[in-house]
Image (cartoon, rainbow over all chains, first blue to last red; front, side):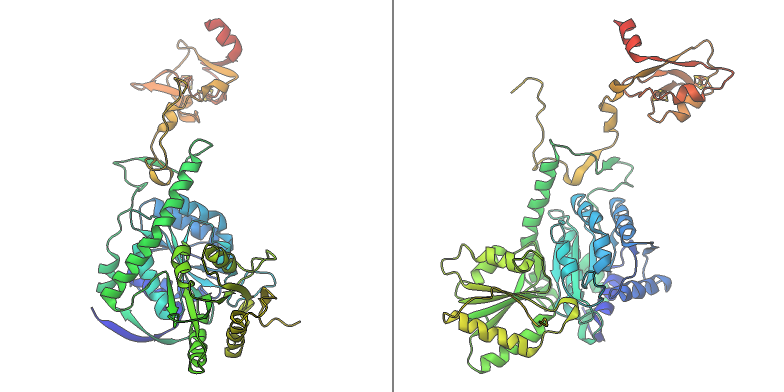
Length: 394
Length: 105
Ligand code: SF4
Ligand code: SF4
């Protein structure tokens, strides 16, 4: 196994992972900021660098439909999208999951319209959070690459058979170049292995039909199978993440803890902001402040029990949402984390920050001020306002 | 539990992801909402099998290349077979289903 040191953007890293996976079918439609992944991959197809049948479709609804058709026919099928594209796939996302088609979807997080905006937030992915897809967030290009490879092993496992979306943050990761490592082609080929579909419409020896009408007497059982697969996916993700570490030296879990050992206050967030926050944590630690970070990697399945264990000693938590559920009660991560903490003996105070909508920058100073406020809350200070829109102009 | 209750599989044993064996529609008798019934006149029929080609419900039965009858468990009474039977032949007539059932009793 050779590790190849490269300087790549998130989009290049995702396209390279797809080239090395060499899927049977890719059906995709371009959308900023994921366009490049499709463009680079279609160049691989044109150059004969992959064996993939590339289907240029007229919309993301068709992209996901064609990908599902290919997967149902027994092929390893992928597509790529972002934002409005993911929104246009909405109907199909639920069907892909329920038909147990293990599609892996590289997805670049971008705000949803309106107003139209091409920059990062997590509204698109959060809009698909209840569709039955595994959702894995990446902090940088390396993680995006590694996560796509692992998602194949998670989704295609016979005990799981759920589709996965692997996300990067639009422009922040997708278009920024950084140093990372690729595996060599043979290693990836061997790691991902040949695809054995659990059912294939092209298998004439065992003809079957897929997606039949399922009324009061069977629908519930099929949905229960999905719920159960999602529950099992948690163990599988951990298993695959550890195995990846043993093989290639980079281990992954459901989340990453950063200086949490003796942390009194903590932040929890998803994606690229973790990199900036780690730096702020280091600075504050040098000042003697006991602060820590939890970078949630897997939003679906949601690792509530595992997270609860990490928060046992913490006195105040800031839950950082890069999307707003417009619920009047904060963002989706806030809902989840607050509910996770409810059964703890010593429950930390929890506040929510909605930040970075439409690509609005979150600065070192923003993050620092949130940690400082958390320390104040830990010392008995007010938790009002419960929900803060960080950085919005009044 | 009523005697005619079928033991239905639970989520642990139900085939995964709504995958079913092919051809199960055959076991589901859907011909009972028909209001017209096709009736075949073997004396007129030329066995051209145009009716067999056009029947949208595969309800024209053919054996050894000849018209054999209608599958009334699945025929919907749409009348396409009667309409496509060549005008010079008109070997299929559509009759009122209620009348046909009364006659059968
Ligand atoms: S279309 Fe008419 S003539 Fe031809 S096979 Fe059918 S019934 Fe007979
Ligand atoms: S009436 Fe319609 S469904 Fe019935 S046999 Fe004729 S064509 Fe088929």
